[in-house]
Amino acid sequence: MKLKKLESYLNDVEGFESPKILFEQYETPAHIAACMLYTINSSFADIENKSVADLGCGCGMLSIGSALLGAGCVMGFEIDSDAIEKFQENIEGFELGNIEIIQTDVLSLPDYWKGTFDTVVLNPPFGTKKNKGMDLKFLKIALDLSAHCVYSLHKSSTREFILKKATEWGFESKVIACLRYNLPNTYKFHKKESVDIEVDLIRFSKS
Image (cartoon, rainbow, N blue to C red; front, side, top):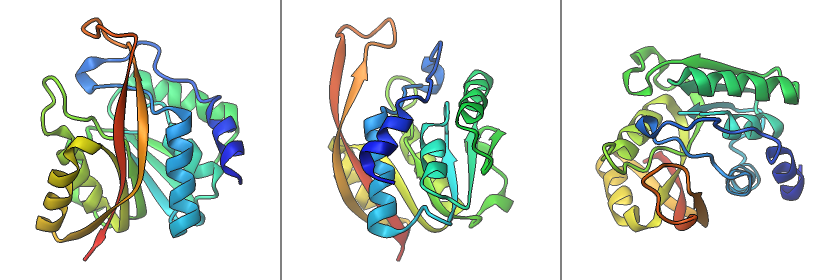
């Protein structure tokens, strides 16, 4: 599937109706998701016929994109019941049968999930407001879940710190794409109509 076609499909994925700041819920734009997943699949062959986990999957943007690119199976992990309901509606709209979702607190996943998936994808909370450090917590769990590699989005301003932590944890890491994330006015404390944030797509693999 070509990049433009994938993005066109993902534009039909419905997002949060009432996003919750507690979970730092922001929709992953279709353009970002498409570029992310297309690069993962075309450059590294880490989606097609692979088992894929989507950590903090929200309404299913990355899960659905992975399924459309031919993942063998996709498992989404999400805590919010409203997001899960929308996720399930999106799956029905695309008539995809190779996706499952589990309602759970990602931070409390049991050990039996460790090393279960070939590839883990995630757009973690960036750790703003009261969620400081949440991006690292999500990343550490993603690294535990994967038997092969993890692809995660992080603010470019945190690049040096993220790469250093990966090395400390025994993982190789490489920035494989630099993207511009348009963050719309979503919550009451937002003063601007939208803000552009530079983000890195980073690939993590075991050293």
